Amino acid sequence: MTEKLIALVDGSTYSKSVCDHAAWIAERTGLSVELMHVLGRREGGAGSDLSGSIALGARSSLLQELSSLDEQRAKLVVHRGRAILEDAKVLLDEAGVKATEHLRHGDLVEAISEKEAGAEMILIGKRGEAVDFAKGHLGSNLERVMRVARKPLFVASRAFRSINRVLVAYDGSASAMRAVDYVARSRIYAGLSVTVVTAGSETESVKKGLADAKAMLSAAGLETETQILSGQPEEALGKLIEDAGFDHMVMGASGHSRLRSLFVGSTSLEMIRTCKVPILLVR
Image (cartoon, rainbow, N blue to C red; front, side, top):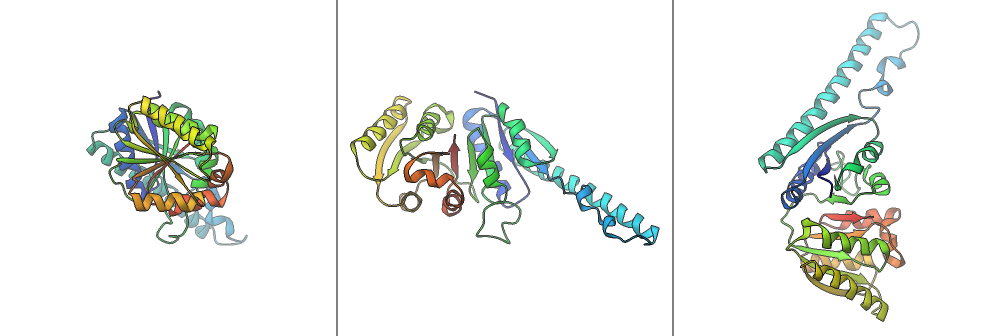
């Protein structure tokens, strides 16, 4: 097992939740945390050059002033990024978790692709900096990260709460079985109550798949139950989480049958948007 988690923080409401979840995972696993804040290419860079919009013949003093404003803004963006990381590190320090800080310029997806090989997991908030202005939408970066991340992706909910009951969504696919295997092997889930759930008809194949998943989890010492739901997965699973009081959901990041739609395009984001508990996506 690798020795760190990558926690993405952007200064939004969800950043504290990302840190709290990272601390919880680190405490259970002994992993360290690498806090990452990525400054986009246009943040304080040449792409925001104010002086470039001034026509020829403008007074040189104005051009100099605008150029100075560009430089000041670029410096403020960097200072803000460092402050976000410092605040996040304080939260982890207070929890007794070892954390490092990494401020990076460039594209978030590229940064993750380069760094994730040395990480056990990536943590990201469900929404980003614009959450208060667009409460019905997910973070603009989340879907991009979902599509490229190869390591398990932990999507933090708005606020942390203690995790005791875990729902594993299962559809019989290889991805779903890898999710079950991850839960069985990971120290994160040791001692927690796990329920493996599928949506669809109660066929012999479905029952056998659930039995196999339960056997794997039980062999790992986890208290495990299984359940078959009727209806559309995104509706049935969301209702079960609310009604039964689950604290966390684990899913394969791709699959087949109806569950596959949860991770393709807008339907996947809809599931994450409406679900109030943190979700772990396993490739």
